[in-house]
Length: 322
Image (tube, rainbow, N blue to C red):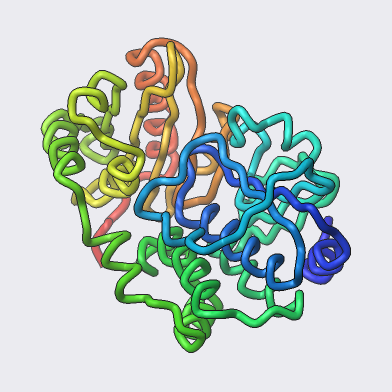
């Protein structure tokens, strides 16, 4: 297992580097990738970036002005990727990866070397320590990238994964010019009209199980097509399910293909989302995890709801108030 010093030494020695983000990219994998691209370019290196899915429009500023190359990579680095399967159509690149930088305690090794810190709130928290180790100054543009990942993976610092170190890192990024207020507004306080149309539909169809302690939202492809929702519109829906009073386990079931459903699970202490998703070959963190279930929508929902029921029975009653 590598550490920060090992990762820095490798990156300083390499050139022609391909950086990979996971499919359905979020602010952490993209912020981490964009920050690393900017840092390596500052060192005079050639970099490429790749993701199986398009970068959502609201994250476009992360790569603005970044001069990406077009070359056959000599080295491959994956950021915020807990399992090579999460690379989607780019999984073959994952099998060739030289280095993985990740903060998931459930990380499944796939790269030749991996620097994993399972207690870090975000991969961007790790990257904020790595970039100075590369001898690169954290510019305002890099600070924006890193703050984006830190803020989005902690729910704007509201989740239990935000530690004192997370807040110290955020403060340092603000000192280096991160536009915290503007980024938080775009990430958390701005929704498109299509997103509102989608939310109206899914909220009206939200289902509750196990005495209201488990809530489920279903995002079928038909619903996405009918509302015209984009990836940006879908971002953040998973977190909303947990916001309902009394809900301990909030589920979002999204259709990904024929008889394939992506499960996003959010949990309130002491429930463990990662342990539940692990039963289906998935993983993540205690408060947020995911997995994929194959079968019909009814089958997928029945299986994950049953697993949630068993977990709730094990932990007993949970008071979601302070």
